[in-house]
Length: 457
Figure 1 (cartoon, helix red, strand yellow):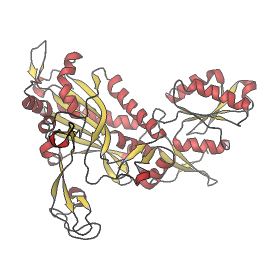
Figure 2 (tube, one colour):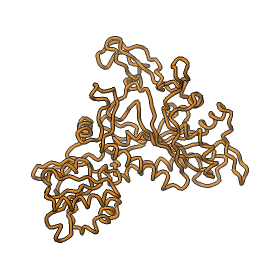
Figure 3 (cartoon, one colour):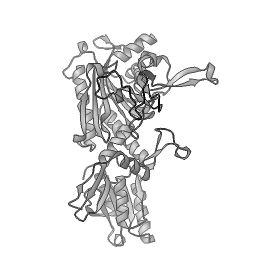
Figure 4 (cartoon, one colour):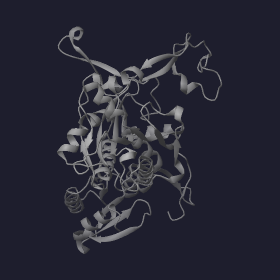
């Protein structure tokens, strides 16, 4: 298909349908009628999700020699959330329609109006109540009896676990600022208006990195000022998306004005993506100053200052944060990879053009027929490749139909074993994007595929 052209911009309905049909994402508890905005990741979804997390983890920890990892507990002492400001201030303004009883976040329905808040329901034009603060943290109880148990919270973010363990980590790992601590983990928020598929959920997964730096008056070298480090991480995080194939035209920075920033942030920027429902936050980069460590020092009574063993300088480190939802990243890469192409004959194929590092299936092994002399060779090749990557075996239907199935799930390479393979010792490797076919010796297949997947060929 040398003259193929991309002909459509994907809708959310198309992506939701594809995700369910091809095993990426399923509605949660569907056989019981579902649970609002609960989603399960299917066989291909968990592969894509794991590849996404692995790629982020490698970028953060393996490619930076001063960033280490952590897996902190979901349940923490309730005083953690008092110190962080979540108990008092982690709320959204909520309005309810007195007629249809639908609930809305005031900031989402206000739009550009000059009114303090909207008075008419966007759904039925009924009267809306005045805004009331709605707390976003989910509670649970520890202990055998709820009434006498201890109230704790399901963490609304993963960052606080990093701050609680920061002093233990920099001591154990002999770290000196600047250094980072990265974490991937589940968070929970009692969202008023979850929706847009997996964009906003009550149970979600985050990838966060807190970068501990010197306060400006203790900065020794160029490039270590908080504002300079903040700008550096903005660009690094933007580059991460584009290097993994996201179209630059679909990404932008949105700096927060002072009155838009979170209570802990002196500087804040969102990386936004142009979703089908409009430009919305994908990732946040914040300069949190010393707010968190200082707050936990005061609340716990534990001094979380860093002492430079050479200069004897003592200070509470400041922090630059990068935080992104795994689910939002998943949706972004899925949307941006989706392509419909048509050729001069009007034939259309649907392709997910994932970067090979993210593709849930790296290679498909396709014997030209089900005859034993082909399937035996094909299964042997599948077994060899499966030691290195996720491989799918498919012998059902015409070869053209099987190619299309693999295109639709984003498989970069298809390997066809044909009737000449036994005689010449070669197989045909077909590229997803160019549809070019190479004849490759079976003993060279592993190296050929690994080079292609790793971007070296």
